[in-house]
Length: 66
Image 1 (tube, rainbow, N blue to C red):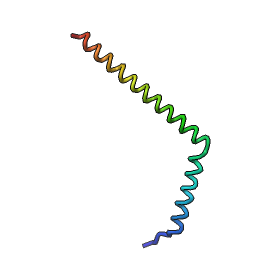
Image 2 (cartoon, rainbow, N blue to C red; image 1 turned 45 degrees about the vertical axis):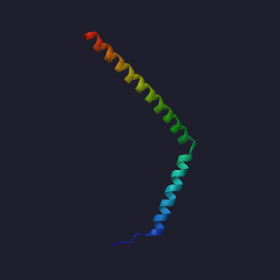
Image 3 (cartoon, rainbow, N blue to C red; image 1 turned 90 degrees about the horizontal axis):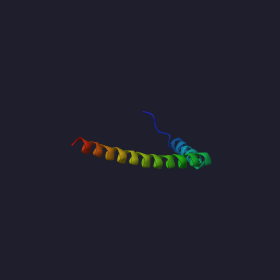
Image 4 (tube, one colour; image 1 turned 90 degrees about the vertical axis):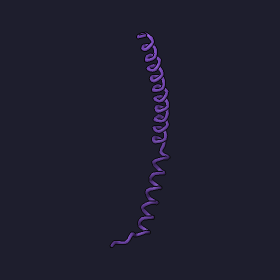
């Protein structure tokens, strides 16, 4: 049974965390995520309006059949 090299594991985890932090702070990445966040908010609003309109028309269409 092989043993885990704890020092190597710690070194790899530290390298990974440092790399992830550099990527997270990159101006292009920050800008892209802000834009994506804004797009998601707008998509949520648009979807909410679409559901509301669909619901309204559904109710009106039901009233017309009676």
